[in-house]
Amino acid sequence: MTEVCHNVLLVEDRPNDQRIAQELLGRTKGAQFNVTTVETLEEALNQVSSGDIDVVMLDLTLPDSSGIGTFASLHEDSPDLAIVVVSGIEEESLAIDAVRQGAQDYLLKDSLSSTLLSRSLLYAIERNRLNYSLKASEERFRQLAENMGEVFWLHDVSSGQLLYVSPSYESIWGRQRNELYEGRVTWTETIHPKDRERVAETFETRMTQRPSSEEYQIQRPDGGVRWISDRGVPIHNTDGEVYRVARITEDVTKQRNLQREVIEATTREQRRISRELHDSVGQELTGLGFMARSLANKLSEQSHTEAKLAQEILDVTRTALIEVRSAIRGLTPVDLDANGLMHSLQQMAESMERRVNIPCQFQCERPTPLDDIDAAVHLYRIAQESVNNAVKHGNPTLILVRLEDENRVLKLQVIDNGVGIQNSVDLGEGMGLRIMRYRANAIGATLDLESTPGIGTTVTCAFKRESQVSRD
Image 1 (cartoon, rainbow, N blue to C red):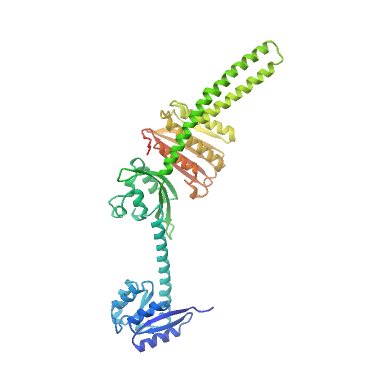
Image 2: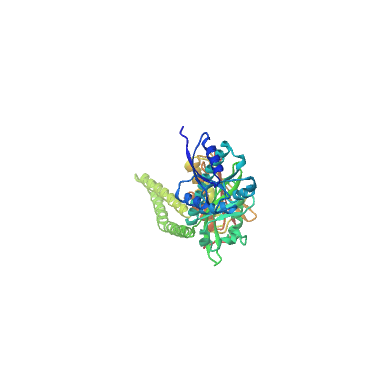
C-alpha cells in the first residue's frame, strides 16, 4: 500500500531543534512527511500563502515574534490551517492557550518521539479536515436555510429552547428573529388563539415522537392573519433519544384561500344541481310515474295485451327516480335539520357496506343533534373521505364510524383495522387529508390522524359547538 506524503511546514529558528524534528519525522512508519523549514513568522506567512501545506509545526518564540501572538498571527492569516504548537516546558501554558484559540495540538520539545510526533501531526491533519468539512456543511446549510422561502426551525427538546430560526420568519411572521432568541415572545404566542392550544399540544407530544404536520393561523403585529403549514421531525442522538425537533413551515394563505373558494364554489354548484334535479327531473319522473301507474292499472283491468309493457315502463320510471334521489343525496348529503348528520352517517355506512362488502358500522350511543348545517356537511365529508381512504388503501375487515358529544365537543371518529400507513412521511401529505384538514379548520375543529402499521388507522375530528368559522 502506497504511503501518503504530507507536507509539513516547520517554523523553528534553532538549528538543533530543526535537525531533531526532521530526524524524528524521517523515522516514522506508516506515513511520509515532506518537511519545509523556515525560521521567522514572516517566512511562515509567505510559505503558507504560496505553498501546499498540510500542517504547521510552530515554535512560539521566533526572531520576529514571540508568545501567543505568534500563533494568533498565523491562525488569523490562515484559519483553516492545521497548526501544532511545539514549545519548551516554560511555554507550556502559552501552548495550552493556543489550543484553546484553535491550535490542533501542542507538544513539548523535551518529550518528542518519532511515534508521538507523527501521531500528533496525523491527528491534527485529520481533525482539521473534519472541522473543515463540518464548516463547509454548516455553510451549505446556512446558505440553504437563509435563501429558502420556507422557515426552518430547530428546537432543543429538554430545555424547550429555540436554537435556530431562518430569516424567512421575519417576512412571513412580520416579526424580528431577535424577539424569539431573546425570549421576548415565543413562537406559540404568535399563533391565533383558537389554534394555539391544539398546536402547542401537537409540538409537545406528537412532534417529539414521530413526524407530524399541522395547519394553523398566525397573527402578525400589523393585524394580518396568515395560514401556516408546519411539518416537524424528531431528531435522535446516538443513544436513540429525541433531543431535537426540526420543523419546516411555509405560508399557505393563498392555497387556503383558493381551497376555500373552490370548495365553496363546488358546494354552491352541487346545491344548484341538486335543486334543479329535484325541481325538474325529479318532478317530471314523479309525474311520469303516476301516469305510468294509471296506464298500467287501466290496461290491466281491460286485460289488454300491452299491460305488461306499461308495467315495465312504470318499473323503469321508479328505478330512474330512485337513482335521481340518490344523486341528489350525494350532492346534498345532510338533511336540513338537527338530526341530519346522524341520519346521513348511518346511511353512508350502510351504503358503503353494501357497495364494497366490508362491515361498516355507525355507532352513536345517544342522540347527537347539530343545528349548524354547514358544520354538519363538513363533518360528513370528512367521514366520507376517511371511509373511502380506508377502503382504498387500508384493506380492512371492519370500519367503525363513531359520533359522540362530550361537554359540547362533538367528536367524529373513523376507525379501521387495516394495514395502516406504512410510511410515516405520508402522514398529512395526501391531497385528501389536506382537504379534510381544510374542512376541519373551516369550522374551527381539530383533525388528528393516528396510524400503526398492521393494526389500523384512526381519524378523529373534534368540533366545539361554540367554535366560530374563520373566513380569513
